[in-house]
Image (tube, rainbow, N blue to C red; front, side, top):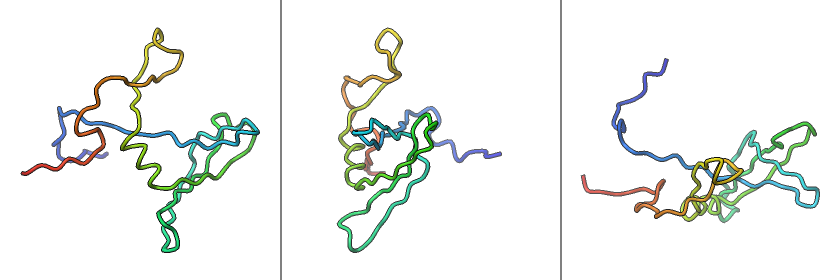
Length: 117
């Protein structure tokens, strides 16, 4: 029964960002694309935090899982420099999403914008 917060963003444009984490075993042609859990390891012995993810295949009829690791800076770079996708119509592509080729707004969606209040 969440009533939501203050409606400060009502009738305002907002964005939702996500990125795909690739976890594969290429020589076995296995793709693990469903994230089941994640853990971020921060340690003084590491140069930067590492994200560990537990993945299973989309159709997990093989009973397999995999653990893949990603540097936090690599994931952040995808959000700060990566290409955008947009939903596609059937005529454009056989996939659900296609690359967005329009002008990227400034500030970039997902970026922090500072202004004097």
